[in-house]
Length: 287
Image 1 (cartoon, helix red, strand yellow):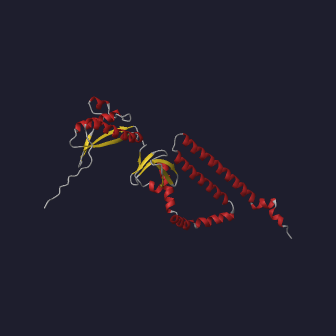
Image 2: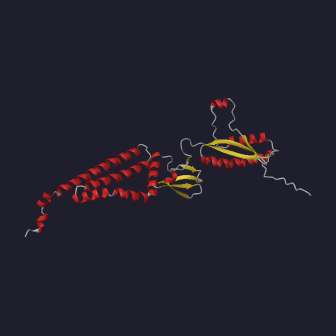
Image 3: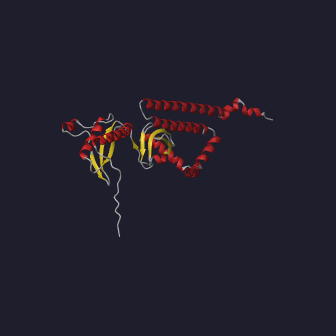
């Protein structure tokens, strides 16, 4: 009777090709590690040269997963039992893909949208954005492949799926020039001196430290006023005046509007310019 241990002798291993396949797997794994190391170094170099870190991190994670999967599949294909199983798996992958597609349509949509946001970078972490359709105003706190977290001005967090972010109109207040135009609007009574009110508003705006004079040298030489106060409406009880002015950023502009409403109100009181409240005249019919 033949000794069963002969099946596992060194000569049997050499003859069956197991050792050669194991060596092939080791070489494939080594090649995979080298490719992964080169890919990791490329990503780090791109980040060091100022490329968008969020986008490069996404590329790194996706590329790393792809390299590892391909390496494992190629290693398994060296063995006949796994090779036939892989062929069967690939043959049935079409049905699996259809089922998975319907089951995870939203998740895949968020992943694809997250990739687009990270690659096109319409905003970055730390940027202040406004989403008019959703009434959201705040700062981008976190960006992941699935969702974006916005910290609102009231210090709450809005978790927005990337598939939604990718379809919304987004105003990025940090993109390019950070200066913003602010609108100071105040209504004065019909009996008040309109020209005096306009002059007071212009003077107060020009004195504020957040005011930025955007006139060119030609405008200054031509006598163009630094602040042009205009009338935008003849309302029921007041004449509405508007003084547009530029501030270094949205935050300083917000504070400047508050300061100017107070200082203009004080100047109006001293000059006899009144800010009316809504009034109604009621006529009672008699029989």
